[in-house]
Length: 262
Image (cartoon, rainbow, N blue to C red; front, side, top):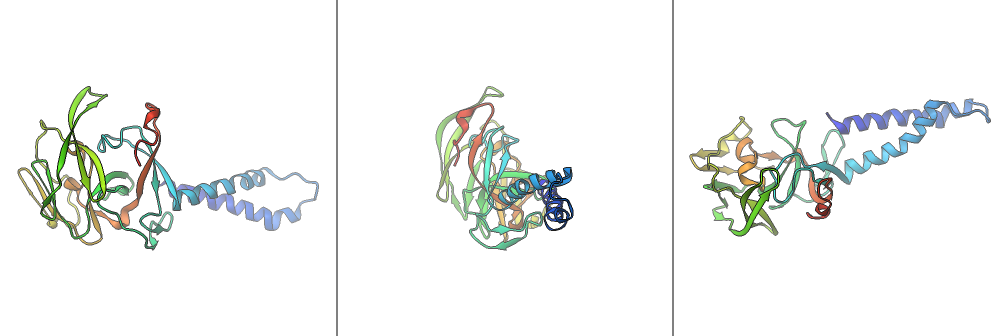
């Protein structure tokens, strides 16, 4: 469901009702006449819906984390806020960039429209920038030939499965964060769909090597062995970016999660 389109249509509908009343219908009614119901509802809802539409389109948008691919950074049920203007100002609904601002940096957590099905929103961490060579073999990450070092940081207890997974501290660019690596999981990485620029990726028995094309990004989940990401379905085009995640504003199961990620 394209919520942005639905919201836009509501803005148009209520705006038309408000404009008809303000510029024409009001002048035709007697001064002591009550406003008809369509005027009352249109006039009441239009400014509210317009404000929500502008806020959601250009400033911040709320999202709910649906899966565990970003554990331990983001948990299932976290409600997050996404900065919509960090990577440029885009036209609502069309998602066409009209003002260039910053580009994603290595380590950013981004929301984007899933390339194989753009009706879905995904969230992952940016690992490879345009022009980067990204290698992931035997659970080791290399960027432009240099291994990204991770240090042991204890274990993470999955409350749903009561299962401990080794946790490690890693740093991409200026962003330190934790990742999970399950020693018991297989190293096999295989594409699950055909994708644009697939010839830039080479798979073998223990991983994948990709050359990130211009205007695209290589993303991965922090829960490395339980994340379908660029290793499996390819690169994220700049046009698919929605924004940068920056804040947890609620979690019904754990109020202490509020503000835990920024």
